[in-house]
Length: 229
Image (tube, rainbow, N blue to C red; front, side):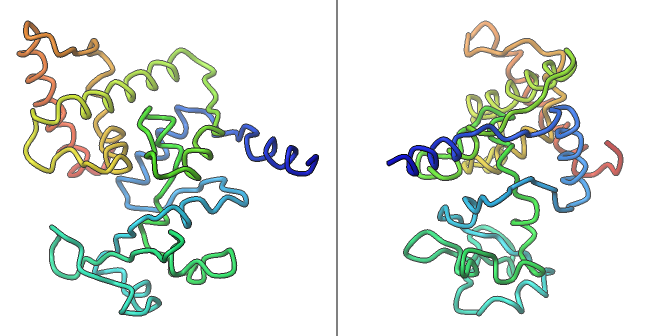
């Protein structure tokens, strides 16, 4: 009994997530350059065991060569060559063997860029069916040494909330249904909300909502096309 109690306490201990502003800048830069991110996962393997479909692009040749073809299938709605890898009956990635990634050196770009700190940062849920991820999310604790850190957090969470509440203001598919991808979109466009008050569903503010949606689309386009941040 004592062991189990201590084990539970250990699982719920806080994990330093770093200074918020530094994390946000590094995450945006990684997204722009399509690079991996350095996540202090420790012994956590929640993302490997939480029933995720893993997207693999056609140019990830080493990754594709490392995965048995029978584990891959065409990614719906994406160009030919884009594939998904599913999970086993336990919700584990099929490449997760003996409690570790068996193709770590050639792991998919999706795995290299995944960072569950995006959930506490944006205020979006990991999902009711992502219990292990959600538990890890609760443990992350960012540092907010300045008012600028708090201001950036507020803007990011306002951006995520706006995307979730005003999906109808955007073209079909612009706002992902997947909360991970929606959190990524919020990180790309959050600066729109640095100087924008909270936008409500009040009909009197319909014009402001549409104007904000246009600004969000422009910010997304600039993020995807400009080399500097």
